Length: 265
Image 1: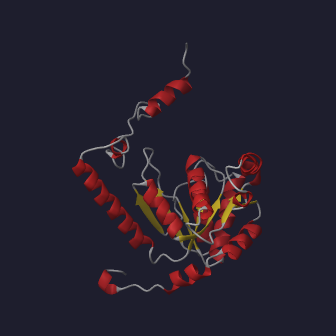
Image 2: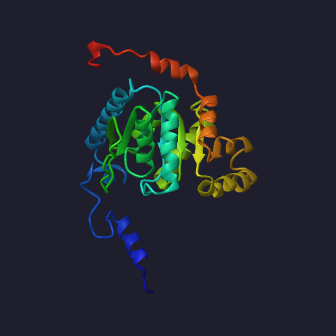
Image 3: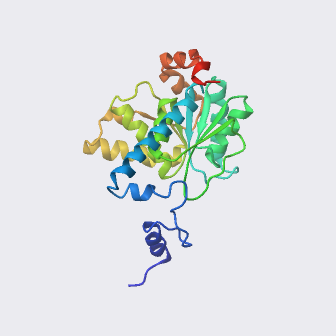
């Protein structure tokens, strides 16, 4: 049976290679695929725990005095001419006007748009990158750029130090962040955490799936589908974020003071 180019590309991806034959290994953390493939030596796994702990500490120190943030997610593949880019840029401006920092993945596309909008409004703009086989360069609208090796460490930082998520059209990574936050809110692990989907035409099929399939089948409760607010209006998005803000967390973050004896500057 003949195989298509797509089948061959998929097979190479499963082997840990890009379609041109370039291996994924050796990028960022060459041992990570091996670590996630099952048990390794006890020494190796103990050292991995140390590296993971060190990455958490580095993230905590980097974000601790960053101030209250809103995370904006979306695809790196949209050009400046895209209406999604324009919407992301406007949301960056609106978030900055609220006195909140904008944090994104730090790359191009929607991420660049939100960082750009924040900078244009005089806000603080942060990139929170992840090491990937395909190198992602930081966009030029960042005040600070932090790179993580582990997805789960990065996700903890984005939830821990953000007061809300704004999610524009994107792919697997965007969906991962979206449903991570939705699950944490659904299960009560985080409270007062607004999640806004922007791009009605793009996200409507997903919302219909939640409401017409998952709710009907009983896999989620009707209120669970309401955790996500869908809109194309920056005004409505801002109102929803303002209504749902955890004011206690907001005040606490703004009162933090650096301690020189801990090396905090």
